[in-house]
Amino acid sequence: MYKLIKGNIKQIADQLLVTEQGYITQPSPSPRAGPPLPPRHTNSSAPYPPPSITSQAATQRVIGTLYHPFDNDPRSIEAAEYKNNWKWDDARRVEYTIFQEHLRTLGADHHSTLQVGYNLAEIDLESGYLGKAAEWCQWVSNNSQRVLDKRHPLTMRAESLMGEILVSQGKQQEGESVCANVLARQQMTIGEDDIDTLETRRRLANAYSSVERREEGIATAEKRTESLKRLLGENHIKTYAAVLDTIELIVAKLSSSNEAMAIARFHTGTEDIVNVVQEASREMNNLLGPHHPLSIRSLRLLGACQIFTSGGLTEPSETLRRALATAEENLGSDNPETIQIVVYMGLMYAKQSNPYSYLVSQQNLELAMPWFRRYLDWAKSRDILSSPDPQAILGMIANMYMGKRDYQQAQNYYEQLVTACQKGNIPVPADVQNMLQLCRMNTRLMSPYTSSSGFESLLSSFKRL
Image (cartoon, rainbow, N blue to C red; front, side):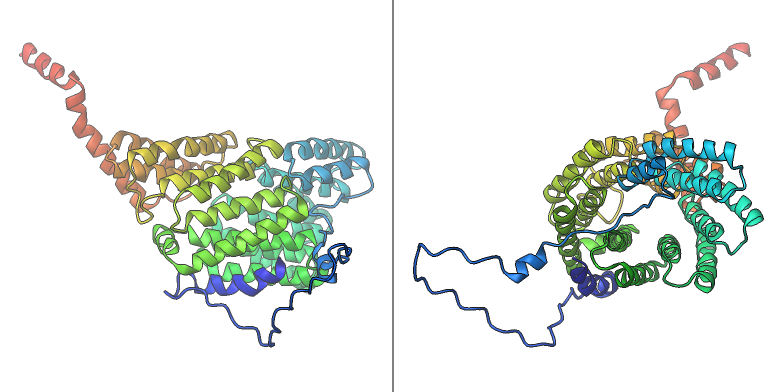
C-alpha cells in the first residue's frame, strides 16, 4: 500500500484544484516483459503447483503499536492496550488510577507523575475533551519546565501537545507558532528522527492546514511518512497511520470551501484520489481486520472522498454507513471517529445536489439535519462549540436555513455561532454578524403578521386618549 500511496498521492495533491488536467500516470523507466504464456495442459491428475514467491511476499503483516506502555506496570500495559484500540474512556480510568497513586507516593514533581499527567492530557485530546486536555497539559508543562528543563524531552512533548490543543480550540496561528518552535528545539536536542520530533511534525502539518497553508501541510505530512518508513519500515503501524494522516489533509483540502468542493466534484483528479484511498482501505482491512480503528478510519476517508465525485449518493452512503456501523459497534457511539463519520453523513446530504452554495432542497435539509444535530449534541456534551469544526457546522446550518428564507431558524443558529465565538474569545466573522442582523430584521418585519400584540397596544393607547 505504501508504495502505491508514495507513487501517486503527492502528484494528485499538487495537481488537484490547480490545473484543469487530470492525473496522468508516469510510465515506468524500466521496460516491462510481456505476460507469461499459460501452462500447456498435460495431465488433469497432476498436483497443483506450490505457492509462488510473489504470493508469499504479498502475505505481509503489520508490526509495532501506536502506543507503548510507560513501564512494566500491568496497569500501564492495560492502558496502552486500550489506547491502541481507541478505548479512551477505559484508558483514562486506568491512567487516572496510576496518576493518583504516583501523586501520593512519588509526589507531583516526579518524572513518572508528570508522564502520566501527559498521558491523561493526550487521552482527553483524542476523546474530544479539549478543556480538560488543556488543563492537564498546562500542569505538566509548567511543572516539567520548573523541575526538569525547558529542553527536556517531556517538557517539549507537553509543549508540542499544547500546540495541537490550541489548534483544536480555534487558535490556529498560536498553535502553529508553538508547534514550529518546538520542532526547531527538538531538532537541535533530540534529533530530526526522534519519534517525538516526528509527532510534532504531524501536529505542525495539521496546523499548516488549519491556517490555509494546505500544500505545505501535505508536504510536511509526506516528509514525516518517509522518515517513519525509513526508521520503522513500511509495515509498521505508525507508517500506515502516517499515510492516513496525509490522506486526511487531502480530504480537508477538498472540503475547504464551496469552490473547492465544486471543483473537486468535476475534476478528474478526484477519481484518482478515490482509487488510491480505496486501495489503502482495502489493504488496511486485509492486514488489520475490519474492526481495527485504522481500518474504520480508512473507510471513513474513502466515503469522504466519494462524496466529492459526481457519481451520486449510493457509493458514499454505503461506504459511510458501513463505517458508521462498524465504529458504533467497536468504538462506541460517542467516539470521536464515530462522530467524524456522522459529520460526513450530514455533509453528504447537504451537498448532494449543489456543491456551489448552501441552497438546498427541503428534502436535503431534512436528511442532513439529524446528522448535524447529533454532532452538535456531542460537541455540547464536551463543551467544544467554540472549536472550529462545531462552528463550521453551525455556520453551514444557518446558511442553509438562510438560503431557504427560514429566518427564524437561521437566526437561532447564527446566534449560537456568535455565542460560541464569544465564549472562545474568537472574533466573530463579519459576514456572520451581517447575516444575523438581516435575520433579525426579517423576523421583526414578520412579527406583526404573526402576533396581534402590536395592534392591541396601539388600540389601548387610543383608548387612554
